[in-house]
Length: 354
Image 1: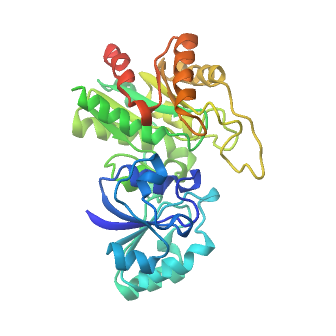
Image 2: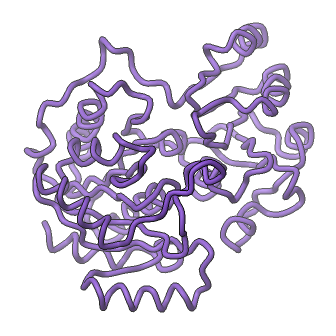
């Protein structure tokens, strides 16, 4: 595993820093040895993110990161609106390349197609990795109705908004199923899951519309053929009701043909996470999102929402516990905060589907 520091200056612990947040919590591809964020320098990354120290230091700049953490790679840890390379990050990326560090990013603007960075990388013999770059069109797959025929369960983790915990929950659910001796494989649909090291998945929102469903479907099939699990857990994207993300959830439903759906919700979130400074779009209710998901899933194979995951954003532990009780009583579904409670409540419903 390459030793990597994450560039997340000004955003660590926030939704814009979700790539950094995810890598600090879980990484099978890179050994995360530091986070660059001058606004939180001197603190422990685990303590900032989850209240539990994990030994990953937050440093002020790349110079301190190189001296203290000895990285081989710099990972851009932000998910910017539009997927642009932040202008204020360019000097740091230039400094990294000039000092012999490989650079990894999951943005829509590709490092490898940036004239300045590609020239510098060639001069200094380093790699530029664009995790959000899809396969060439001639190599891309189209929908072939393959998932429906797989002899395993397909469980997408979907939600009421972006940046609400779908990927984290999908990873925790995969681990919980394997711990319960129900073989499970995770399939990523975004750049963070791929950078974390998932061997299966696609950068769904970077794929041309004609190939979105087929490309993901082919990865689900490959995951089954190579690992033979009883359950394939698919990371969600956006929301079926989100005005800015029109393709993600619907494509995931069509590609996976769900056997069941685990749905994430942030009860204290009032408006969508997308561009709150420009658009104040209200969050849907739990009922509205379940209705939308089950309508489209019904057309694709019949999977229903079997559990509710709670994102504790801006909630106290007491408020979360009360919400769990209320949701279970109101909806008749198991509910839990995956980060605080784990995903064991969701294992039995999946076991019963098999």
